Length: 236
Image 1 (spheres, rainbow, N blue to C red):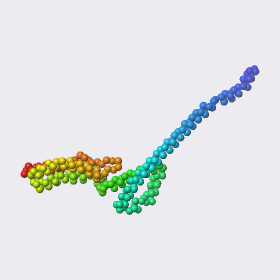
Image 2: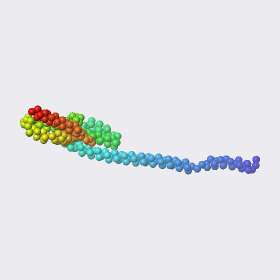
Image 3: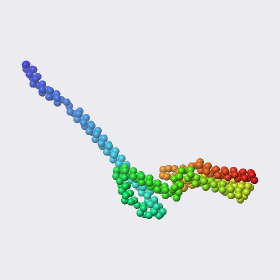
Image 4: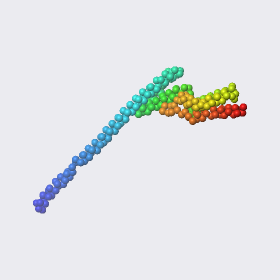
């Protein structure tokens, strides 16, 4: 064995150990650092978004609470005027327990409960402002509106029949027919206004006045009556 071979054998293990520790740990540590940074940033962004959404929900809940209080105050006074006992206007303990249970989920549950309360308050306000016609107000539009258009449409024909019975088939009746020509248009216009007055729409809705149906309801009796009077005058 030569001297150079002996040196190679002696130095070989040392070189192998040096080669085993020659890998640079910086790239792996840098990759782990980036992963942790991204994860931390994601958590931070998620927390900020959640906090922002919660703040908006709390603000919306406060607005809903103010709206519900504004609606309930005049309704309570109105119900007292109508003879409702004061004790009936205060929620019972079981009702309070149920309401509290529905809001344990945090701001979102509170906001949902307040929106339901606002909807109930608006429905109550709609019923109170229905002027005693709350049942009729829930009818289909045409039968409901016929209660308004019908009497108005019969007014002019009844007046024409009264003139015919009193004055006969003379010039006065002819004049009454001429004067009564715009009667159906006037009756339908008054009916259009009255439908909106007697049957106010629900919040967020528009009243269905069934304009064409109203014109027909006011025009048909007038046309039939006028035709009958003309035939009576021709026969006379």
